[in-house]
Image (tube, rainbow, N blue to C red; front, side, top):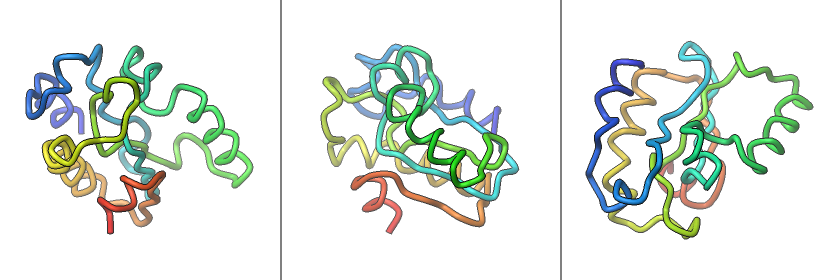
Length: 126
């Protein structure tokens, strides 16, 4: 997974690379059987370069703990790897540019369960 991550750090597949601070690839156990897929990074995620570290991430962590899951039980990524300005909805061309990256992450991880978080993630994964 690290090799794949390194290979996309300079992605310019859509215009979002112009406004990103960091490409937000994914995080977690690459042997996890559960993968969570969100829509796109937010401001905090863009600043830190890690998915789900902002308010939504804190809420998600609480709920995962309640469900008896630990960080090492999951891998988490987003459909988009760069933050849309103003946290707007992803555009079709942005999803199209990032989708091969998400598909490759899924191929590498080969999770038993994929859980979508949000409308766009659900639409992409159906």
